[in-house]
Image (cartoon, rainbow, N blue to C red; front, side, top):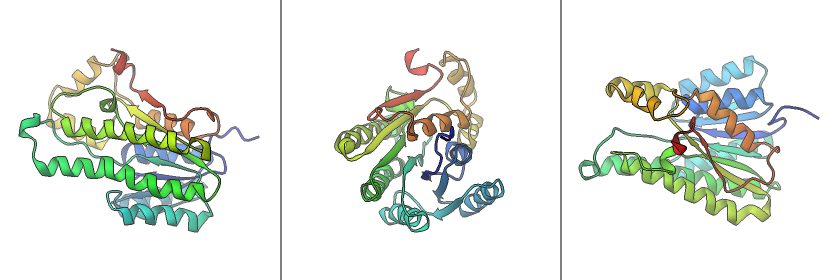
Length: 254
């Protein structure tokens, strides 16, 4: 029996061109998965897939935007066409936004955040679940945030979107539990990525504040979040569904 968590599984990863998504592509591959990556930046996807293939992993990519139902469907269809089935999916694509008081938040900022973070997960779930039902089940992890569990000041649309991801996760887990599909969510704390590095650069003192509010006193590496997702997608936790797992250094308990 293979000790790899995702041996022989076909896994779709959204938002795979950077950050947690790119880390997941590498971690899942190391755990034996065949990975199908989707994001908007083809240059990043192509480079990542080239590297994975060079390391002996079966990998492919589909350029797309999860806020488009057609793009989400195309990514799922490509996985099934290439590999015959879809065993697992990590719905990781998301956007943040600058910290702005609620009464000053622009409509277009709200719309963009909700379109990607909520509609994007909705679009992916619909097509992933349909593919999994056709092939005997599967596992899905949606990437929420600690902002899906607690309030974060001056980030109302983001907080609302990540709470919605938790709601979609629990609803889907309940609806498909007896049809062989598990659906769970991650709630990462502050995680090092290009986006957070840029945000810290534009908001002096915020990195120190984030670390001070985390009992472990640090931010997470993207690979740490990806490792948690790999476990949730694996067969090692068959009785776990509808859960929201914080990967936050103790932040929500602080």
